[in-house]
Amino acid sequence: MAIAITLKDYLSNNHIEYDVVSHRHTDNAFNSATASHLPTAQVAKAVVLKNRDDKYLMAVLPANRKLALEELNRITGKEYRMVSEPELGHLFGDCETGAVPGVGDAYKINSMLDDELFAMRKVYIEAGDHEHLIELDQAQFMEMMYGVPHAHISGSAVSEQGRREQPRRL
Image (cartoon, rainbow, N blue to C red; front, side, top):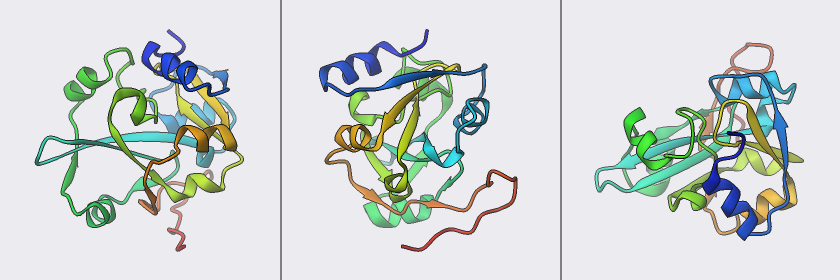
């Protein structure tokens, strides 16, 4: 499949320049980074959430971090929970399960971006399948994410060496 049609159309319509990185089949963004020999902090993963009002939110954070759901809920003043796999299939019909591109705007879903991604020279997002990533330089990523709210919404997760990382305070 390579790039999901919705994502490809969005990138084209918004004049976002990108490259495609191919890798062996993987099951998540962290493993896609490893298979592509990329720092896991540069690969953005999408965590799709829903609140009690059935409003969706896509949290976009580095693949080596964990969503700080309580912090996100505090910041938004809402109570979000992760959506089910069938819901993901409905929302992202042109993507393989578990390969959600971290571009909520392409799918008409509000997003929140983790501040950790601002420090990256390049950012990679899932292309919609389990064998490709979209490579964006920082300027293109920021243009694509212009207007998306951002905050420190991630906590410690597994590091490149397999150790637990401590969350950084900004």
